[in-house]
Image 1 (cartoon, rainbow, N blue to C red):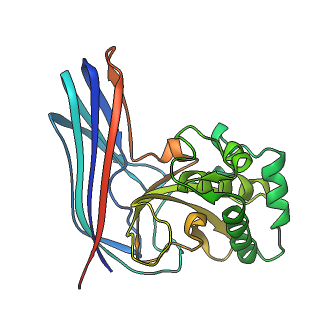
Image 2 (cartoon, helix red, strand yellow):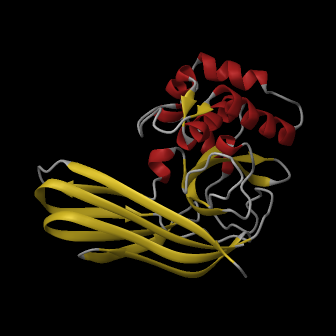
Amino acid sequence: MLLTVDHVTRYRYDQPVRAVVQSHRLTPARFDGQKVLAWAVTVSGGEMGGAFRDGAGDWVQGWTVKGPVSEIEVRVQGQVETTDLAGVLRGHRELVPPLAYLRATPATEADAALQALAASAAQDDPLSQAHALAFAVAGAITYRPGATHSHTTAAEALAQGEGVCQDHAQALIACARALGVPARYVAGYLFASDDGQPHEASHAWAELHVPGYGWIGFDPANRTCPDARYIRLGSGLDAKEAAPIRGIARGQGCESLDVTVAVQSQAQ
């Protein structure tokens, strides 16, 4: 599938700030399921800094915007050719061992309810168990946009019974780790096709490490494994660590955020 992305993030400050420093994970991952044909990231008034590929295989790019500045636009435009690998992250090079993803974070700490949900899906076969965990989370947390916020934890989302893709991913991660299965959060894009299912163009899912297969993606929000409609950017222990854009503004101004994402399919 040939997918095009146009992703715009605008930061506005009610008072001009002296400078803004950002770290981006906005470049598609390198693996057998996707090939970048064209990709560009621009930052209004920005100066590109250092860049590196981290141990998880993600490309991290630094940017600086010198002030005073009241508005910044980060724009991502590109084209990616994708292949359906049934969720398996094949051909992805990374140095971090899977066991490193057993560590819980405040957002993915498994409370008694999450541990009970995990236990209800436990199975002897690791692959069947991974699928069962994803379906258990999908059944326990109803997809509802706006039901949660960026700081909602997995435990809070489960207690509420509603959430968005971030909540589904973090709850699945918490359940998997509770059973000793390495799991991580993945940020990316999803082509919102006309299939009647809920989608978010700027999307998130989880990857679980399954013996004999390696990392496999699971998207409880859409009850599926990532296929050719998905573009993978990067990963982390939770949503905060895997965020495509992280940064800090130097100044007293309060920040507001506006994001628009368009993912389209083109004929090959």
